[in-house]
Length: 58
Image 1 (tube, rainbow, N blue to C red):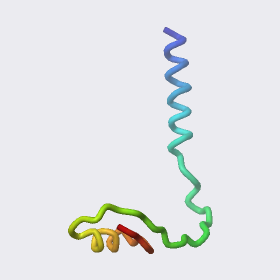
Image 2: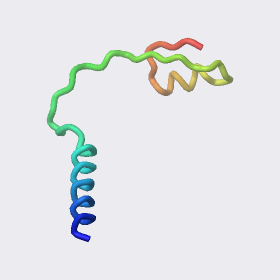
Image 3: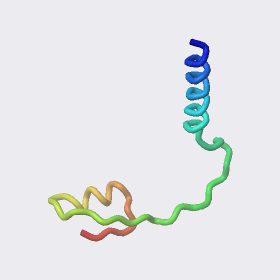
């Protein structure tokens, strides 16, 4: 039973470490506009504009 508890503790520690993310005070470089490729469907232009894609093709 101790082995199971130890494994659970290690897994919990790893998951915590992986989901911690970066510090809040870290400065980030400016993000360039991203582009996407999408299927052509009714409303695709509006949907991609709402997602703020810098460019796209269908």
